[in-house]
Image 1 (cartoon, rainbow, N blue to C red):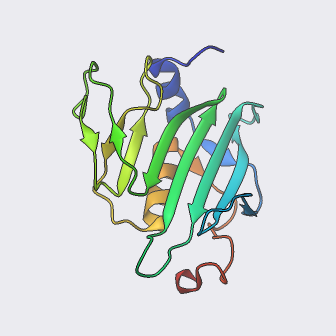
Image 2: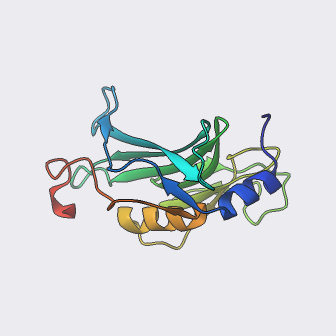
Length: 167
């Protein structure tokens, strides 16, 4: 499939999905970054099928008290495209200028939680700020609602040793 259309993505997002994974097995991403990034990936079941090209990917890094806030990136990947993204970080985004959306051409700065909304031409490059408390559980819950996704297990983080205050 070429780049999905907005209609394709809207249909995908509306369809109920279930994480195939029966537990959240996080793996540490190889990197010299501090704090380290952790990743969870799972296929999704949709209409009783498990397509080979539909995944959820979560990337998370722990906070460093007084220096770095925790970061979380939630992605729905379809045919190799990030068709839905909800991020909790302080990344700056410059939105494409020539689309009919509220933040067209604007730079998002200081927006800790934002939503990447699929566009037929620009893919996931468009981002809009969200009025969510910057909390990993709230951000993931919002992502799961947008993706119409449920889980067979409880949401969990890589380990209590990595983020002791969360458990």
